[in-house]
Structures are given as structure tokens and as C-alpha cells.
Image (cartoon, rainbow, N blue to C red; front, side, top):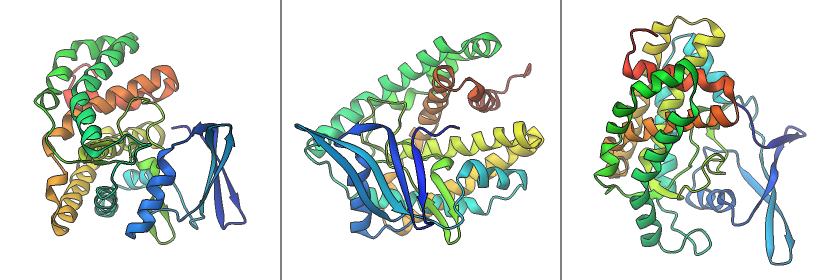
Amino acid sequence: MDQTNYSVVVGEQVVVKWLTPPVAMPHPAPEILAHLVEVGFNDTAPPYAALTCVDGDQETLLALATGYLPGARDGWEWCVDEAEAARTAFAAELGRLAADLHLALSTLRPSTDMGGTANSAAGRAAGGVADRAARAVDEALALTDGEDGRWLASKAAELRRGLAPLRDGVTTPLIRIHGDLHVGQILQWRDGYAVIDFDGNPTVTDAEPYQPAARDVAQLTTSLEHVAQVAVKRRGVPADQAAAWAREARAVTLDAYRARLAERGRPELLDESLLRPFEIEQECRELIYAARHLPRWRYAPMGVLRAWYQDDTR
């Protein structure tokens, strides 16, 4: 995967992430990072400063400065190593980390700048998830060409059927989500794991900040399956071995996530009926991203979808 911003390490003490291009305020990261500090969530790079400039009435975010985490590697490196070695013990930490993040974010209420009242944000998010997912499926079908496109078209009805729980209505609590929670946003460093990059999804401009926690969880679980595809393509891991690793890593992650929510008395944050619909939408978004920005990435979401829908001609 590629990186949309430019980061500079200063003296192995501070990381300055320059936004390319700069983004108009309000931006989600400063608010989220301030809240995480306030509630004592420490499994992230410690936030130091936000650099902005003001031109007339418009304030623009130029850069974010955070603490340097010694030995940090992102998940497209360390997690592929885990897949190659068929290790899944890390997944328990991954699930705990995601749950702790959601528990912290569930106490962040909407500000006026970021979307008005909690009720208005909830109403927009709950009302739009089914339409948004359906549009993603339609767009992926339209943009995916060649043999992959023909195969995808043959599965269109199954993909759309898989979205049914979203059409039935979303009743789960809506929280401020990370919005782009994949293994690439999870650093493995000297003292454990840390989640980073609270910028939202750069490829989805109309996403509501308050959504079901299952949205983030689905993106995290699908990213584990993408890791398996990367391990097959780049490390020569046998496909069956990689698929088995992905299934176990996903199961361990979800078990740890559920256990943490239950331990903290908030099991209602995860509506499991929404996981597969959001996973389908996510894979379609990966195909859209590949078609528009990174064609070489298409093998990963296509590999996942073919595994889900078991194609004999694969």
C-alpha cells in the first residue's frame, strides 16, 4: 500500500507528518488525539502538536507532530512476517487494542464543527450505510475489468444479498470511529503495539465520523486477509496455509475484541450482523481504490473475494 502523506523523523524523538496537500480545518485528528489523551488511551504515538496556518477565515492543517516509537514497523511489514511464520498470538493484542480504542472513542461526542448533535450525526450515519454500501458494490463492478471483472459480475447478486443486514436498519450504538483501521495503521514497536493515523479514510469523502464500531472491525479483519494475500504473492507462502492463517488470526482478533468489550461492560458496541456486510463493502472499496490509484493492489481484494465465494476456476 502507498502513503498519502510525508513523514520526517527528527532526532529519533519526534515524527512530523506533513499533510500533502494540507487539509482545511476542522480535521478529525487533533480532536481525536486530544480526546484520547484526556481519557487515558496511551496505545498510540504520543501527540505533541498540530501545525496550522490561517488565511482570512480559513484555518488549514499543515502537519502533526507525535512522539517517535523506537523500532516501529507498520503492519504491512510485521504482520506479513507473522503470516509467513504462521503465528497468530499477536491477534489477541490486536483485538484488545481495537476494543480499547473504541471504548475510548465511544465517549467522544460530536462538536458543532464536526457534525452538530449526536442525534443528527447518528441519524445521518444510520440512514446512509445501506446506500453507501450498495454504491460501493456498483462502482466496484463498473471499474473492475478483464477476467476479474467478469468473475465479479457473476457474483454480483451474492454481493448484494450480503448487504441485507444494512438494509434492515442499523440499531447498534454509533461512535466516533477511526475510519481507516487496517494493519498498516498498527505499529509494532519496542514496547508493543500502537494505532496511528486518525485522519479518516482518504478515499471516502462522504463518510460520517460517527458509525457502528463494526465498520472499523470489518476493515481490520479484511486487512488480515489482505496480509495473507501479500504473503502468498510476495513471500511465496502456500495459498492454503495463508488462508488458514487469516481465518485463525481473524477469529483470535474477534474473540479478544469481544472479551475486552464484555470485560468493560460494553458488549453492545459490536453488532456482529454488520461485520460481513461491511467486509463486503470494504473489499469493493479496495477494488475501487485499485482501479483509480493503485492497479497492482487488485490481486489482494480479488483474492479475498474469490476465497469467500469459492470459485473452482481460480
